[in-house]
Image (cartoon, rainbow, N blue to C red; front, side):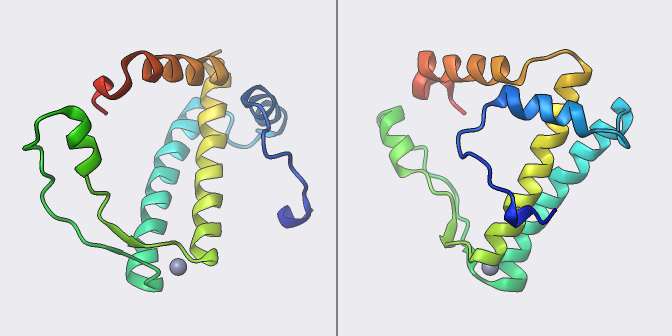
Length: 138
Ligand SMILES: [Zn+2]
């Protein structure tokens, strides 16, 4: 089935996604395959970002030293730069979405293998962010 013809609800739950991964994962079931696939897709995501810069050109990276010399964390936060100029074209966006989706597939597979609920991991992280706010210092 063509992935573009599949209609998926935008707010699919992590539980549903994780269950679907459990149903379809066959060939790379070993934790060795899963962890190395996670590495592979991390590289593929980074490669897709860089190709958006060096091959397509829809985004540019203009990196400079970050300025931490401010009075407050709030002021630092508001002055940090992501160093990206421009925005992804539809083609680069589609490629990145595919790579990120594959990464999440193998992340879900890792959770299944180790009996970790992805929703609970997301909720714990969300709780930490809500509790610590900008003091989480990420
Ligand atoms: Zn592009």
